[in-house]
Image 1 (cartoon, protein in one colour):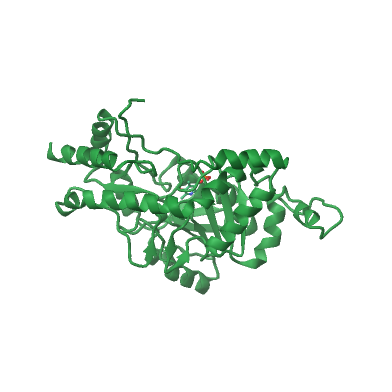
Image 2 (tube, helix red, strand yellow):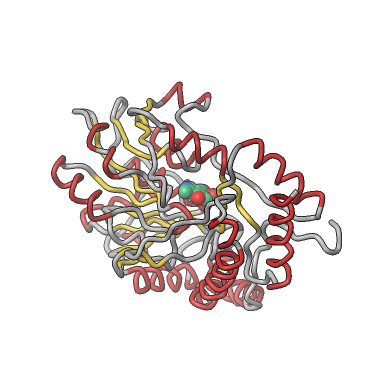
Length: 380
Ligand SMILES: *Cc1c(COP(=O)(O)O)cnc(C)c1O
């Protein structure tokens, strides 16, 4: 990599990770659910205000656990945005569920709560609220619709740790929340995730599903004298070395979030004049949400512009990327799911969105270089 290059992401280490891994090594407990995992669980329960937090090896795994806990049967429909990562849909398709894709809002890029009800049928079981870029979905409306139709609400808060909606932490509002600690997320351990359970009736079964379908957790708590096979399940928990690494990040979560917000605000100020000129559109943050600066993106006029800007930035050693390819028109999305109504905003945004480099050790001068390069593209 070029010396002056600006990568899209650089995982941030607090400096405590190796110390805690060494401590786990010394403890001699390396399988899951050891002392570091318990510290992480308690921190999540306290910070997010969830009834039960369980570390998993990914957000994907947490979503797969939700599909099992919700007893999704073949043909059951799950409403979700098309503008999301594949795991949101895949976890339910694995149980025979049918993703029903709904368009997003033009401002927050979150599922359009006003288009959810038209997608509900007799087979609908759940609504998934994906908090894009750590900005809260309209949870009040979504919860109200779900209550009226007796549906489960799952918050895919993979990007939403430390964000709030009307002062409620994301992941604490629906029946379930899922988090990701993938290297690209704000708080990370390489690969990792968590399931948040806000409805107590699911807690006991979650412990069993996460431990290969056995009641090993009850055995370890001394509640039963032997453990055996009780339900379907898999190995969804991470080992202690991962939890030790993650604990270092959780301790610094507040600081990491604040640093990211400062950088995000710098981009936002520096890009304001391009927005006023109508050349780019910056993210919209509504007053009801405090976001965590997970992503800084701009919307450029056309897909041709986006392709050209990525090349323009790359020629200046700046790595900018885009996502998502809409799920409703993807090969698997057309096979396993269906679109509800028109998804033109999803298609339009997916062509025009560009993510700019954002990571805690990014320097102000590097942000200036990125903004300068974007400005030069438009003045050319
Ligand atoms: C990152 C992400 C996931 C997947 O997380 P993993 O921990 O990599 O499995 C799922 N949903 C959304 C919205 C994400 O951003």
